[in-house]
Image (cartoon, rainbow, N blue to C red; front, top):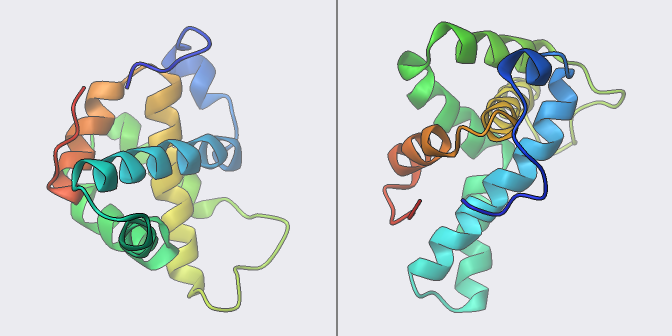
Length: 137
């Protein structure tokens, strides 16, 4: 990924953040990955936006999490569990299934955790499985 304003933190320090904090940064990291993939696909801005929506919504992220869950190590699975059990101080959006919303929070928490730990290669490995795309380290 290469764009960092600070050094990665250790797994223990990252794990000390609550799951919603991890999801907060993970949401942004995931969207940057998806937008980068859309650029590499050579789509127009309109088509990039339309395609991106399918990758950054709760339902899509819930499906991605289901697909990658068997590939997670114990540490990653623990972050996912924490993310799934996190409760925001607001209900899920009206147009989102609560189970999908919980799973998407778990997915974003995992991405955020990996990012904060400096594990970009692992993020890209998972992204390639999901996007089947051209992410370059």
